[in-house]
Length: 84
Length: 228
Image (cartoon, rainbow over all chains, first blue to last red):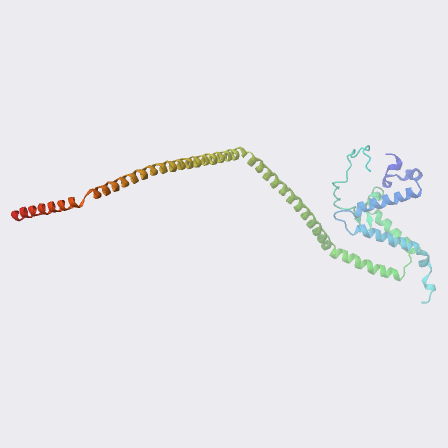
């Protein structure tokens, strides 16, 4: 189908450039995109009859990575500079 | 305010019945990385590709100190060990428990549905039976008509009997009256005749009759003596 209506996983790497130009970067567009992403994640991993630990553990791992990224400045100050 | 000019229910879309949930979620390897990543790398690097990528990335992050090893690393390691051990040990039990809860809910809903269907079936049969019963109403009316005819007949005969009895009583009265009158007339006549006869016997006649009787008695006694 047309480029803007395909899900992101089916867009090829070479077409990523043109795809990025078709999507709307307004507030509503971004909000709609976030909502769609969250909805598809829930439908695939959480709202199933026999889900496992994968659904929540991926969210927790993502949260760990994000918080490490936000606090990188704090980590990178070498701790050996403080009192032993 | 309902605008009746707007057409309602024109499309096939409806909210019920809700489609059932999928059985299993997306495949995830080691609990963290979706299977699609491995499939994505398979054509170019084969089976070991993602693992080599992971190891190289980890070593790069450690050596370049992009990931700093500090006390939190040890804490994270311990926590992760405990979590993995708990999931491996108690996972199936929790899953079975949740499945049992779901099963109970489904069973109760199904039982309710079956009960309702059964109730409606019995109601249908009862209704058919009632319809069959209603067909016999002609017999009922015939029986009622017969009853009423019998009542009328019995009443008519009762009144006929009453009439007969009354008439007989009046006639008997007249007959008894006539008999009584004749009886009284007879008695009265007999009395009158006796009274007159007694009056007509004068004293003279009485003496003569007594003397005659005595003579007759003597003659009789003589004849009786003679025979003895």
